[in-house]
Every structure is written in C-alpha cells, then in structure tokens.
Length: 181
Image (cartoon, rainbow, N blue to C red; front, side, top):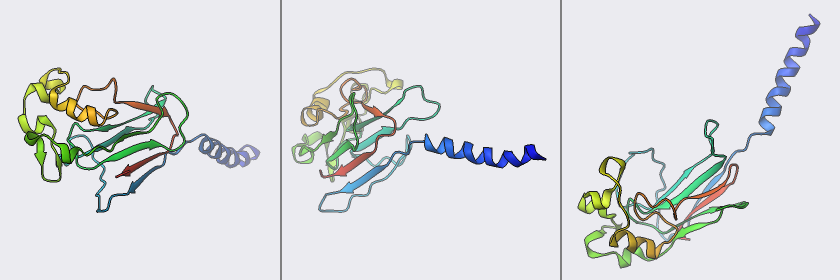
C-alpha cells in the first residue's frame, strides 16, 4: 500500500518536468497595410488562388533530425502583398529577418500582370522552363525569376532557388510576419 501512495506524486513530477523543457513558438501576424489582408494557413496543394506572396516555415518537429526552424518568403506563387518574416529573439546562424517590400505589382512585366498582383511564370506559361517541379524536371533562373530576385533578394524566385532563400533559427525562436512592413 505504501508503494502506491508515491505513484501519483511521481507522475505529477514527471509531467511538470517535461513541461519545463517544452518550447512553444509564437508567430505574430501584423497587418500594416491600409487595406484588409486575409492571412490564411494552407497545407500543400491547398486552396491556390495565385498570385500570392507566401511566408513559409517548418518548426522543429520531434521526429525531425534538424534542430532548427526553417523559414522563407516565396514568390513562386507570384506576388500580391509586401511582407517581412522576422525572428523576434534571434540567436545566430542565418537567423535574421527577411523581407520583400519592392513595388513588384507596379513594375510587373506585362505578361505576368494579374488583378491585384504579379503572377509567377509557371501559372502563365505552364512550361518545364518555368514550372521546374520534381515531376517536370530541374531548372535554373529565368529572366522572370531574375525580375523577382532583383527586387527581393531574400525571397524564393523559382522552385529550386534554395541556396539563397532558406533561412534557419534555433528551435523555440518566436517570429513576426508583417504585411506591408
């Protein structure tokens, strides 16, 4: 009977101990635009609706061997609103703010113009040269992706633009996504 009396206390201590080592990540979304922006979360192959500026992130998962969070701004689906993605409590590595604040809509090439934004070339032309997904082969920069990259050097400008467009912060970092920074 004495053995069972200690069991509930041990179980409570175990839960409290595991909670003290858990890091919750907070992501604040701020709209500084003079108009409503509908921020939405989308799973892969979600609701589409190009053109759209994307803030993408992958937070440390228990099964993930990478200890860091990764994040980026992507113009692969086009551009419709300027934004920044900033670590709130950065600590080293490539853990730094990224942003895309250029007037891409105002400077958009005629072939890519869309209502309220600037399309990506894959949406418009539907060719391997511009779409370069795993099922369509590999590709490199094009004049259209270079248009986006010149204006927003931190952002993905085409699907295989990983080298200059993916950033990392230690797991547990908090973030702020700001529309119209």
